[in-house]
Length: 298
Length: 99
Image (cartoon, rainbow over all chains, first blue to last red; front, side, top):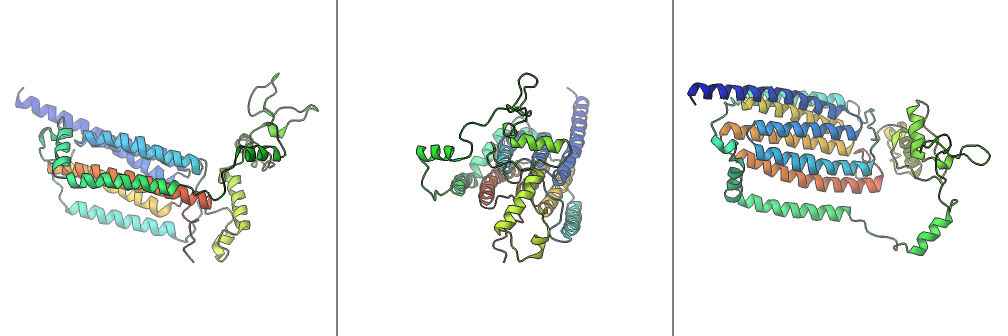
């Protein structure tokens, strides 16, 4: 292979890298902007996944194939799944309210962001970052070998400290997630008594009128022909009412099948507010918390 | 593809993450924005490693990933504890130490 071939191959490679870089740069910046603009936390998580996958490909382009795989496995695989699990517990459909709780916070944040951008741009503009130094196969096929050599020789002490850090983090998470039992554990007798003590000891009626419809969102008919409200899950009823554009469904009687988690949708959020204010957990001393019934929830 | 482009992209992503931390009030989203900032710094480390021609920057990016994973685990556990006590993930709700 002559020098001309090598040069052409290098140019083709750099052109492909440039195209990849620009496409992924645009995608990741747009996804990042969408992340801070999306109101639902789940959309933020999905857009964060887009950013992380783009960055993984960028690592591969920049000569870090091992880090690209670690990025996909650790970040997109583990960290983001952990985020999604916690989101499922905290409430998937919660929306951020767009009301500012601190006056002028967004303006100040925008000014600070522009100042930070200008500062960092000036710094990297003055830094005169040169072109890529010839690194040989360390940025290609021998990347893992080079990294392993560095980690287990020069950086072996930070590596051991990392092990201690991970164990500490796991222990800390277990301690934090542990719930101290304040009441005695309910026995089987207690559970059965709780089950019968309610207004509905039998299972709730199943949905659907089988002759004409067979769907979970269609209420069953009582013997006198009226629809049985208890036969439809309250979440489905609420979703149906919201998707039809009308007002959210009224809260169901306490005998309903599934209790609505707090902060599930708009109506549940306002219900939760009312509960919280009546319970007195909101600080009544501040005028701000008292005057905004629907805001500041996310 | 010069490393300065990568560093410029890292700067933009870092600023986006910083804005998210400042503006958003859902603790989950704030965590995600912190992750975005850490990712941006990792990208800068990888770019500098490429520019310097040695692998030290990649090793440091690897350690940053480990620290970020530990941070996410502990942070989400704290968030779950707060959510269990306050029934909310908003950072405005955790204000018992304020007054």
